[in-house]
Length: 127
Image 1: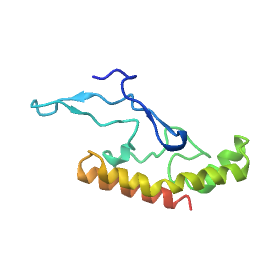
Image 2: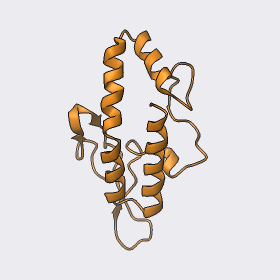
Image 3: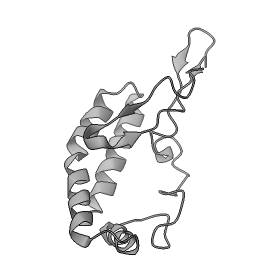
C-alpha cells in the first residue's frame, strides 16, 4: 500500500485533489494493480445504489443539487454573488477536459462512461 503522502497532485487553477486512498490491490492473485481511488471518484460510478451526492447537506439537501443551492450556500458563507457566479462558470469550463480525462483514464470502460455521464448530468444542473 502506498503511504498517504506518496501520491498527491493539484489540478488546474489550484483545485486540490486528495489521492490518499490509492493502494495496491491483488484481486485475482496474479499481479498487483492500483485500487479505485475512493476520494477522487464519485461512489455513484461503481455503487449506483448510493444516491447521495454530498456527504454533508447543502441548503438542506444531499441530492439533486442545482445552481441555486450553491448560490444560496455562497450567500450564507458571505461570498459575493458575482464571485460565486464566476467560480461556477470557471468550473463548468473544465467539463470537456474532465470528460476527456475520464475517457483516457485506466478505469474500466463502463466506469469511464458512467463517470463521464455523471459529470455531464451534474454540470447541466448548474446551467
